[in-house]
Every structure is written in C-alpha cells, then in structure tokens.
Length: 264
Ligand SMILES: [Zn+2]
Image (tube, rainbow, N blue to C red; front, side, top):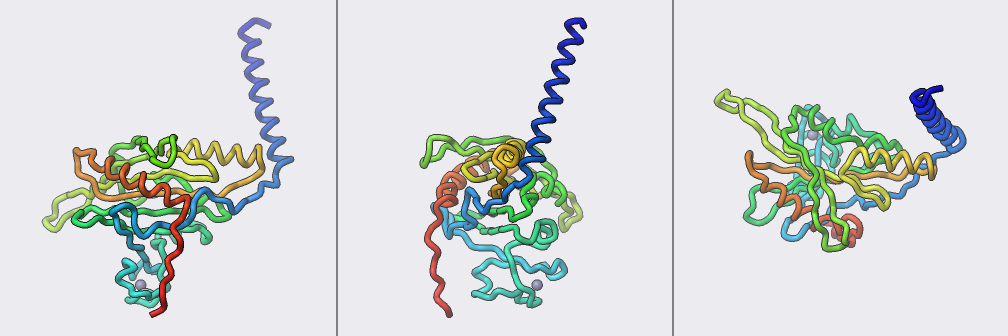
C-alpha cells in the first residue's frame, strides 16, 4: 500500500468512525428531552431608553387584514372589523409556525423621531422547527437582500459584546404614478438559547446538535428581530440598531415586573 492509498484509507476510517459515534448517539441516546428552559423571557418592555413601545395585534383573517396598536384597541381582544380573536402573529406566521410558538411584538418610537423600530421575539415551542433562518421568510415575502453583515455591539452589562446580523433589504412596488419604487428596510436579528447567544444560524444549528447528541436535551431557542426603514446609501441604521439593541438586551434576561392593568 503506497503512502497516498494509506492516507485515503485513514481518512475513510475516520469518516466511518465519526458515523459510528453519531449512530451510537442516535440509537442509545434517542431519549432527547425537550426542556422548557429558554435563555430569554417572552416579553418586550414598555420602553427601551427613550423609545416608547406599543404592542401590535393582528386579525387572523387574511381577507380582513386588520392590524392595530394596543392603544387603538382600548383593551378589546377581538378585531373591531370582523370579531375574530386578535393575536400578535400575523396570518402568514400563523400559517407557517407551530401553534405553540411564542411570539411578542412591539413598535418603538422616540419623541420627534419618525422612524420607529419593530421588535419581535419568537420563542420555539415543542416543535423546535419554528426557529429558522429569517432570510427564508423575508425573501419569500418579496424582499431582496442587498447587503448582509454581522455588527458587534458593546454591552454595558458584560464584557462580551452582542453580535447582531443585519440585512439591508429592498422590495419593489409600483407607486401611484405607475413608476417602480422601493421599500428600503433593514432586518436585524440574533438567536438566544439557554446560556447561548449568536447571530449565526450555523452556530445555532451546531449548538442544537451538540445539546441533542452529547447531552440529550433540546432547549427552547428564541430569536430577536428588529426592523425599520433605512436610507439608501447610508449606514445610519447600524447605529440605531446598536443603540436600541444594547439597551434592549438586559431587559430580555431580567424582565421588568409585570404591570398591573386595572379593570375599566
Ligand atoms: Zn378582522
């Protein structure tokens, strides 16, 4: 056997061994325990620094298409137009996500600032498939990714910075005069698992596999998404995202005490 054949054989043996270990793990550790443990609370604060938040609700009926700020509903839990029970998922999310997926959503605005921020937390239920790459949803909705990069945001609360993936996206539409115009937005996100945090989908998948195979557990993962308008040719939105995310971050781990709503 020449040297070359030998190294190929060693490489093959290594692959076979890796398969064997994985199969053993699959056969003998099939008792993967789904835990209720998440690295985050499913709650968005009423304000983030000087941004004031308001919850957003959707009618589940696609034809009705009702969407409301909590402040417009005056405590009502059904759609003022059609009477269906409102929720924080839009109809597309209801259709795509498993029923036990948790989702909260608020719109944040600052006094005198016209461009607010939509913040969403999605928390996986028993079916962990509810957390996937946001790129898939966004491009399915007609958005084109123009740019994509990870930004590193310093945090006051800890030494390790927060990494956030930011996508610049465009969607073409026809304006009133029949010309093609573009919605230009940003969509920023990161994933949070129990004691883990990453902006990388691949890293998250690797951690989920390690937890399943080595520890036999499957934790609930969440993703946090921020979106808003951006100006073409400007990176000003990166600073906005950094400011907001660094102030939001500590509230996700230690929730503010629930506010008591007195009955009308
Ligand atoms: Zn409705």
